Length: 322
Ligand code: SF4
Image (cartoon, rainbow, N blue to C red; front, side, top):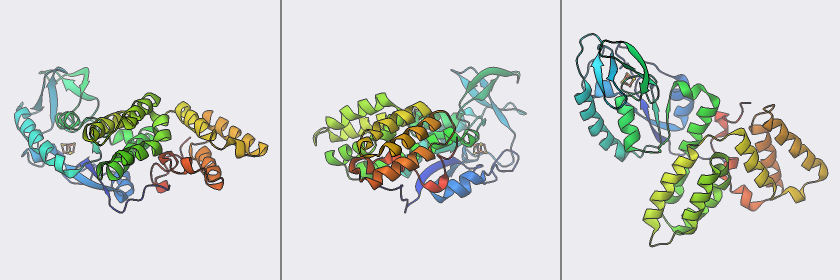
């Protein structure tokens, strides 16, 4: 097992202004170099601008959402024009066309009444901000149409934990679709599940348990339904944040496969490094690198297959933060 090799880039949706397209209400863009240059090495972006897509010009008046969390409308701030219906029609059309793009995730522009995924402020009809927050209209429709698909916002991706979680989910989904969904079989599903064991343990131990039962009960007859249920549960499990405690738990379980082969000095070194990681003194990459060394040195075949050891390309340095 090695890190995921992407000879073909992974299709990921992105708000077009983050991609650098000059589609914002003021004629500008919000290009994010980390997204376009660093992640762009691995992601094949599908840019989407709902406001331009629904026929609005550049530049245009800015808009906000007016109403309650249950019922809100997209309103032009200056003119008071209600753009909701044309945006809804655009969402319906575009969601259908995106179903053919095999998207593995979406990166949304924060705070936009169309594209914001979290915490878009609701306004009163008089134009006053309320404490209530929702998703933008397009983001809302997208999440409803693609439940569980990895989705994030530009600002949150500067948080190292959220960033790693999002990217790990995208690469995990890519592995599932390439290794199982592309050529479905019971053995492919069970082999995938075996390799994903410690990745899942670090994210969601309950999910690992549920998925283990699904994989074990798979038969050629029930395979289509089982695969659909597995992907849904897999995405929800991977959506749980992998905490320090869960990483320590996964690593300790892995250690059980080779601990008896270590010398007392090696065992002590491993315990020290795990302890330093648990205390936040070293980043995750430190214990994982030591684990990889022992696992490959002692040829622990079962662990050598674990996606946990190589969940995403090393160049992204996602496990290097303390
Ligand atoms: S936030 Fe969304 S709607 Fe606004 S310019 Fe960017 S892509 Fe277009």
